[in-house]
Image 1 (cartoon, helix red, strand yellow):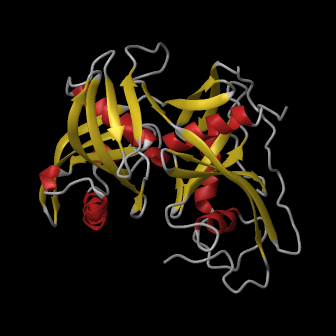
Image 2 (cartoon, rainbow, N blue to C red):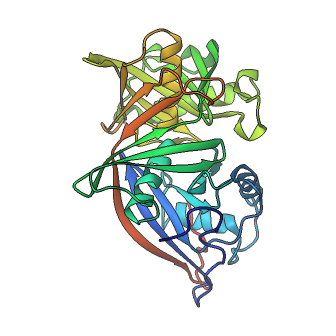
Length: 361
């Protein structure tokens, strides 16, 4: 069985006549891709996952030619065309902070790195069980503990007849930071809510801006999300008390209400994160932030669930746990959704390739 604690799974860059050689296992969680890099990484300095994340962030922005061993070249190789696309997401496996977790991960997207990723945590849980890294029953549940830049999270993998049927993501505690903050947009003044759930999320009613959460309104939704994100740059509620790494608006959740279900609320959302990237899933950590806000409003109590639908029609269900001892301030949330394996990939970079690590349109 593969190592489960301190051994970094990909300690050296594979060097071939192609210059860079990277292997990944790909999943999608409710439609959002997640590319797990299993071979081809350099060692990433740092004693914790958070420190390695800070190191990874510091590797970006170079104008030098791609070189085997430069971490951000590998990220760019995997998110840019012709090997990736602007909506790609993934993670680099790293050692955990201690033996209490099975492994650690650095999350990345087309614009850089992130401190939280619920859909990625769910994909990693399925991957860990399906590859035998974490033992699991044919029928029942297995818990996969993962250290991420924002803390330790858990993926509970639900199994039936030897197959993964769903995964539940338990996030770090979510905290409400501000309510009804007025923000000027090109569609008028919006009153937004701010919550921290491994990363900072801003939530706003799409209908308040005269919008619907629908595919034909994507251009408007992305534009107004960017305006809100820009307007809140430097707002004190977006800063996290623990670390600058967790501070600043990461995602904007535009939501609309749907008819209630028998077990609670139902909403549709689109989460726009980083520099205009659209989450195809209902967004795992964004759902966690919505759960904290709804609980704060008294709209979601113990035993209630939120049916959270994405812009492509996939669904997560979320709930707030009544009390979890030792988790610190904030609400502990769980989000459940479908995860599916989509492929195994071996990516290479030919040193003579004029497009190098690729391009974005």
